[in-house]
Length: 203
Image 1: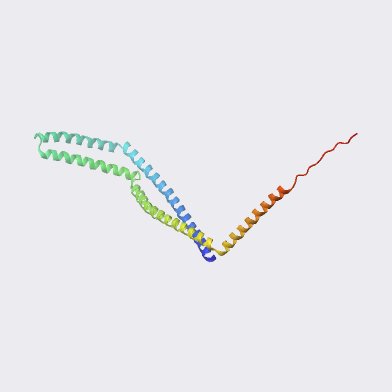
Image 2: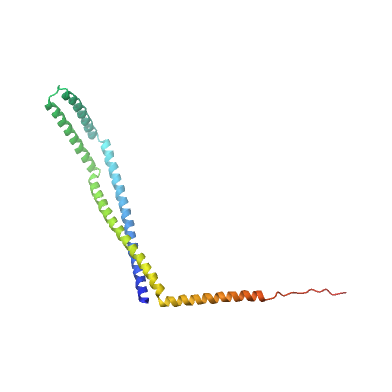
């Protein structure tokens, strides 16, 4: 029985160490994930700033807007039968090309601002999210095992003969101490108070 208690105690401490290691691993991963998210936000802001300040992008955006407005007018003429379909198709093609040029310019600026790293960062975050979920699941499992080990440990301790003898001895000592206290109180009550009689000398 004693061996079983010792084995359960050893297992409990082992689980405690594994839980602590996993908790440290989770804390480290959370700190790393936060740092990556901050880097992503800085890169995104830098890319937005470059796009806002880039004159080529601004001109391409104006060109796209002009083509959209022109296409809107041509559609109205086409619907009334005053415009051949070929001219409408040409306007649609011009708008598509302008949008492609704008997208290419934005992609170039994004890469220059570190946008190519964003894909890597996002991939790392996705992998970390999967690993974190697995680690948390293992942590929950270990905590469950530790609780079960602790329950079995308490049961084993309760049935341990040595522990039972110690408890019986302690109970006997408590009883003796209680009896001594009661006897002491009785003795105090039985003692009569000393009375001193004062007399005066006649002169």
